[in-house]
Image 1 (cartoon, rainbow, N blue to C red):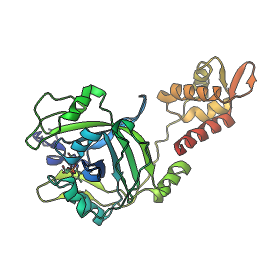
Image 2 (image 1 turned 60 degrees about the vertical axis):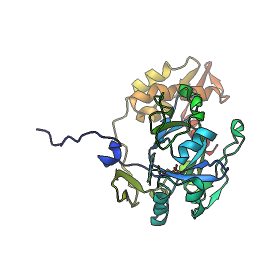
Image 3 (image 1 turned 135 degrees about the horizontal axis):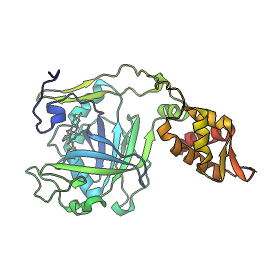
Image 4 (image 1 turned 180 degrees about the horizontal axis):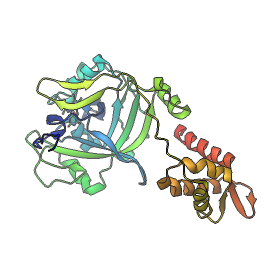
Length: 318
Ligand SMILES: Cc1cc2nc3c(=O)[nH]c(=O)nc-3n(C[C@H](O)[C@H](O)[C@H](O)COP(=O)(O)O)c2cc1C
């Protein structure tokens, strides 16, 4: 016998029938007057994370919202992440009340804003929405309307009574009341404290105080949980691969590159499924490093490995 009860799946299942942990964010877009407008969102997640020509987020929203309308029209937005504070969450919920025009909701908004840093998007007249000064991190994005022919939806602005078909599968207007936006990440802005932690090494006290939206809501309240304290859970210690297996793989990765025993020893802790990718990446880096050749081959030793690792960290600094 199952230990679960089976719930019926209904519209908005993640908030009507689940406790689904989510972030909360305020998304800035440009209103028709050119002013920045803010809308509250949780359904916004990393979409393209590697292996594509660019990185992207996916936003799911009502197609008649100011945010959707502004994105369809201008194609640009900034996703602002706020720390846990009763005052900020209250304002987030206020900015999440449907039906107010941009000017109405923004007229008594106390949040301060500043210019972002993403390059202006020429195709849209160059303007970008402002970002929130109080945010601990911001993603400045532009909508990729080339996917699924969604650029045609730019003219099909959402209406409260719903948009007529056709609907797209995953980008643009996707149902009578819904829209999905694949948002190219143009810049990641980070407050200095978190920036330093990410580049220099993260300690528990460097984490931003992030609240978690429970997903579940009813007609009276949005529910969220306050920030407590981040707890680190160690990556499970698995016995490393045996040295001979690492050396065997390393010897066959690139005819121009060899790996010293010391380097192979250090690579034993990499999970086996990632070893080939890691070795290929290191060999590529080694080839761009102008290393002396020994026996015709570039040698990756512990020192070179450390430089490759440092380089990867330095890349985050941009
Ligand atoms: C915490 C919170 C999270 C929300 N998440 C979403 C969401 O992910 N998608 C959505 O369509 N609406 C969401 N809403 C409702 C929107 O905020 C609401 O539709 C609002 O009108 C959007 O503002 P805008 O019209 O200025 O874009 C959320 C509201 C709150 C308070």
